[in-house]
Length: 220
Image (cartoon, rainbow, N blue to C red; front, side, top):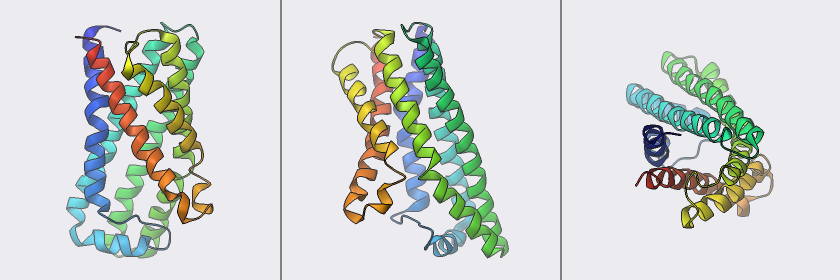
């Protein structure tokens, strides 16, 4: 992996997760829409539909850039890995994840447009489908990508150095990946387990940010 590629990937991974959390944070606000509250959420969002469409588009495009960077990174280190199949599997999972994000973003935009046009039932059904998918296949695919990426990084030897950043990314991807695997069942465990979902989501993307920083530091 040449220096320019590392810089592009590093900055994408270091800044991208922060940006899409800002965009989605502005879109969702302090609410956490559920199947039961989807109608009310879309009603509130329709008050400024143009701004919310921009936030959804920006958030999803930024997330696609991040996942695309992970795909390129996993593909690149596979050629230098003692277990190239692991890196290729990781790249595959991130490719699938990127396609899912594009589909989900399109669905969110469609839901906003339908609700704005008065097609309330259709809008709610589409939005509910995106909520269900985000806690299901999205989480499982992201978990698979993280766990296989961890193995690929270990086998690639020195791709982000061998110091503290490597150690944190190593264990961080493992823990975050395992937490993401549990996302589909967390809602059934009771309110006391919701913190695990928050920890897995925020912690996982912070590890990706640190991975980007690690790539940038190897160019120094």
